Length: 534
Image (tube, rainbow, N blue to C red):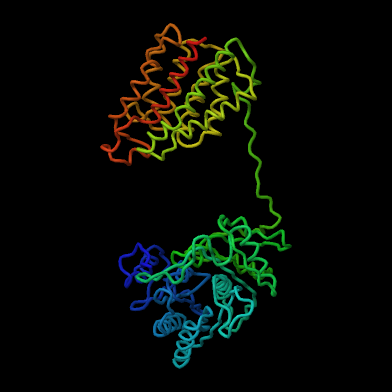
C-alpha cells in the first residue's frame, strides 16, 4: 500500500510549519524559540497562579496548541507526528513558565494523556524541573472507555483531556493552588471509518470496505452510550453506511440530563474519518468552570443554558395572503391552459435523456432529470387541483410547485421567472401584450438575481426574443419569437458560458447546444402546439 497523499511542503517540516501557522493566526500565542512549544503571549498574567502545561504527539490538531490561552493552558509542547514530545522541550516549557510566574509562583501542573511515552517523557522532565527548584506536579488523564478490562498500561487519554484543560484552566485563572483537587469523571469512546498515516508512511492499519471499528450512526451512538454507561457491556456493532450526525448524541431517552453539548473537531487523528463521544459527569461547580471565559482559539463559544428539555423549534411566521393566494377557481381559459400544461409536461419527459446527454458535456448531466422532475410534479398537481382561470394565479401556483419540487439552479430560475411574471398578469387578462409584459418582467428578475444576460444564459437566450416579439403578435400562436426558439437554442453552440458550471470548462470543449436553452425551446414549442390544436 502506497503512502497517503498529504497537502504539505515536506514531512520533515510539517509540524513546525503547522505550529508557526497557529501562532501567526492567533495574536495571543507565541512560540518558544528552538522548541515546539506554544506559549501564551501574556505570560506575565500567570504570576502568582498555577501554570498549566500539556501536550503530546502532533497530528491531533487542534490539540494541544489550540487550547493555549487565558482560562486554559499556559503552554503546550508538541512532539513529532504521533510521537511523544522530547523531555528537553518539556523541561524548557516548564522552566519558561516557572520563570514567568516566579514572583509568588504557585507551581506548574502537567496534564498528561495516559500513553507510555507521554508519561515517561513528562515524568522525566518533571523530575529534572524539581532538581531546578520548580514546584511541579502531574495529573494523568485516562478517559478511554473502549476497553472494559484495560491492560496493565491502563486506559488511554483521549478527548476527555480537553475538558480537563478547561476545568483546570478555569481554576488556575481564579488563583487556586496546585493542591486544589479537581474531582471529575469523564469517559470517551471513539469509532473510525478509515485509517490515518504519518506523512511519508503507509496507513497505520487497514479497514476493508464496509467495515469499521464499531458501527455507524444511530446504532453506533446507541452502542457507544450503552458501552460507556454499563460496566459489563461488551457489545460490538457493525453497520454498513449512515451519517454521524451530532443530533444522535443527545441522550435524554436514557434518563440523562444533558447540560452542555460540544460538537466539532477537538482532538483529531490526521485524515482518519470517524468520531468520538465524550461524557463528563457534571455538577454545578463543574458547569461553572466549564462556562468560564477563555481566550484559547480552539475552544468554542458555547451557550451556558441546559440543553435537555429545551424547546429547539421556532414556529415560522405566517405569510399574509398575496394577490394570487385566493382559492383557485376555474374560468373560461382553464381547459386550454390545462392542455398546454399537459403538453409541456409530456414534452419535457420525452426530452429527458437528450437534455441529460447535452448536460454531461457542460454540467452535472442531470438537466433532463430536473426538468422531468418538475414535469412530474406539475402532473401530480394537475390531478389534485383545478387550473385557475386567472393566469396570474396559475403562474404563481406553478412557481410554488417548481420551487419545491424541481431543485437545482434551474428550479430557482424557473420559479423566479414565474413569480415575477405572475405579478404582471392581474385581472384575468390573457392576450399577447399582457403575456409579453409578464415574460419581460420574468426576464428582468432572472437577469437581476441570476446575473444572466442574453449572451450567457440559455433560458434568457430563448425567452428574451419571445418577450420582445409577443408585443407585436396578433395572438399567441403566431409569435415569431416563439417559433425561432429552436434556432436560438442551436446558436448557443457558439456562446461562451459566463456563469454556472459551464463557465469553468474550456470554451473549445463546449460544442453542443446549451441544455437549458433546448429545454426552454421545447417548452415554448409545446405551448404553441397545444394552442394550435385547440
